[in-house]
Image (cartoon, rainbow, N blue to C red; front, top):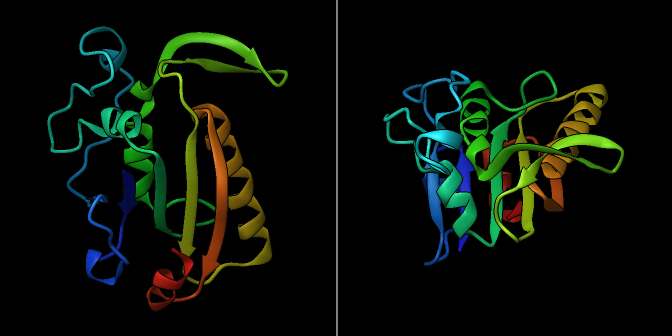
Length: 160
């Protein structure tokens, strides 16, 4: 299954029957750092706003695709909230990986990770975004398939 997390209208996406599409909206709540997704309801966020299953969806997918408006070299606020809320995908314990401290892996799998940024961006913002995606991939035990920068929503279908 492909899990597609997007802040765009889903009409513009090239959908496959096995796709699960999560549209990030302003209705999503911020992670409050309560550790509930680790201790109370392992792998599921305790905030019930329709997005509590993000860690579980990551565990079930083969490919994780994020489509976000590039915002100062990062994700849009709606996408950032849901990536933060996905922390239950990993364990609360730490290990050293590649000389850095990371959370331990909860699931014995490697995600295939694609990020498509849309909108105008400077070269510096693109470089920052590349580093952010790599850091997220390291944290999620993911392999980056590609990071793509497109100018308009119409270009997303081609990037998929």
